[in-house]
Image 1 (cartoon, rainbow, N blue to C red):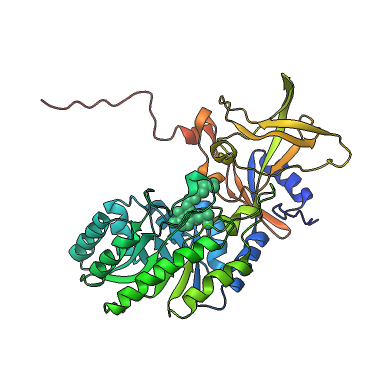
Image 2 (cartoon, rainbow, N blue to C red):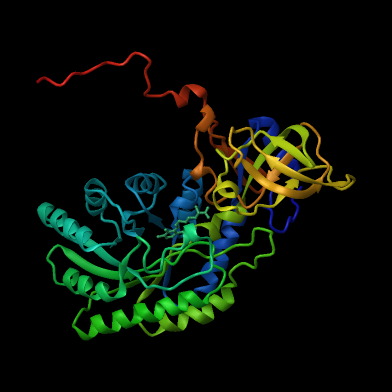
Length: 423
Ligand code: LLP
């Protein structure tokens, strides 16, 4: 049975129960239909201009999720050679990849140039020099972008603001033009575009428009200086979704009105790099109640998932809707601290949250967990990572199996093979 759950993944209760029984808890469950729907909505909103949706692999890099998005026509946004390999494994052509990141290593840059990544956005003058050296040494051509820090503030968590002066991201607008001109005139480099990324979970389109004005000024100035190679205008990701705490998601129609006119007459292809928008609402973390207890006046529900499985509440104080998978209707409500088993007081999913009275063994879904969930897991407390399951209509499949304790000790030894430096 399929139920429309509003902010839920869209996966019905019966399926969630069956999955929990089959693979155990905690477990991530992603809904393919929801990912498709978000992709189509965004694609339709951007339809008036030539555009490319480059899914941000960092949000959820599962190969099955990547392959689903590739099948819909997406490119991908990567931040490391690990993501380059993942994206290639999922079938993305290198030309359909955009690569930004403040600390790309020599090996990562080389791998991207050799693969023929569509846009390698440099974030410093020193990185541009290294890229030039590597491309020229190998006689290759690198597709270069300059990531501009437009100095536009966004209202979001301070850990996820990336487009303001003083942060480590991009190069200041004042320097970007100089670097772009240099790149355009360097053999072995093709200056294909400008890029930016303002931050994450942004629900107001205005900062995108403000930043775009600055980028378009640079484009105009570059063109007046004879630069003709620009093709792409990459405005990054960050499109906000609803997590259930009353925050209104980014309105695509308003976004289109604010942003598209700036690009429409430029002749450039608009590139967007959404991660959360495509997959965030499509995922839930399934977990079961282990124990209930009281501490002072508080009701504590200890569940079998922890901050090691989903760190967002602990790290950003972020809100995730929590729902009892079955039997909620008839139960009275109680305020709970929903916590995990980790030995940290920051190990919680919700504090003082009104929920149906919980019983041992109850199956719970923590919603909005499709983005920055599994990818930010850790194995702290020697906890194997949970499995990932993809649901597609009435079918489901394990797309990453649960890790074992043996997996966690891979590469370790209790009998060191000592080496000694010769004097
Ligand atoms: N492009 C670049 C260059 C990025 O740095 C990011 C995210 C994205 C695209 C995708 O952003 P999205 O559309 O997903 O907002 N761990 C945090 C979010 C960190 C985002 C980092 N960069 C969280 O759980 O909220």
